[in-house]
Image (cartoon, rainbow, N blue to C red):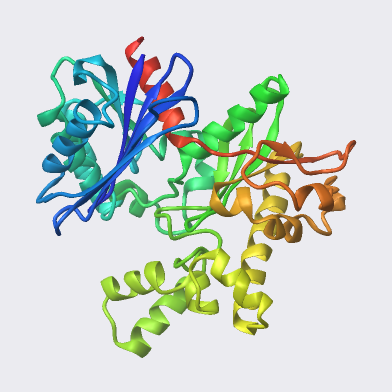
Length: 403
């Protein structure tokens, strides 16, 4: 069974073709600069195990429809083709960022669903319009006989209780304008917590986990018994801990104060908080690897940014242990979580009261591998669990359609 997984942005379209018989990736690629000029990168697993064929080409992509046409061509034609026709695909699964309170699970991507995704664009203006465009473009290109699913990033957090998602504002703001905590990175948090439970052979319903998805965008989630009960991102992905270019949580009055000082509009402030803040705004670098190099070179502001990041994550782990009345496992995933051993070490230092005893020697060697990095017998285990959102989307799509 082959599932095509699509993750579309406003000017990009990433895809993976996954064989769910063995969960191998048959091909993957990215269409970039949609609406500007266009370029496709396509990598197919062809030949002996571990071998691949890579195709790169400049292609005109006025819209997402032309991008999908190129994806179809890359998958079915030429030396990097892995299909004879698109009829070989069982279904298409689309990552959709925001489902609001409407969708708490994977659904068939009907016209009504796509219209609702568009209606929710006010809650996710960067992502949802692109997701809707991609869904329509894919339906125009892929055979009608191939079913398509929408897998929502917010769905995993639908189990968060009201006391955790309602803000301290007039309740009518929630009733009239849907202002509440939604949470994001749901596919990643769902995947890694289930992956750990499966790896350990344990019933996830008896596990208390804090999942730390750390990358350019980062979020921390409390997962009690397999269900999200709280998460750091809120109404938008701007909330929570310090991120690459996002501020994370701050006093709302600081925002209005600076808007007055700078004489800027809400849109300009929103852009500043999303694109010019975080690690970049404090330390001068949005990429943790660049920040780490600057810290090693003695850059004090870079070190401050790194300290704020680590401190924020540590606070959330402690807070979520309290929320769940216990803690069994801490998971690190995402680009930083899986590879930045120094970040993991600093976060887990002085956490013995929570039963965390890191094996510093082992932790320093783990990069992107499924591995426990605490000492044997540690009451609370810390695991590095590589995420695979595309595989979760493929599995969810297969389950929805009973394939």
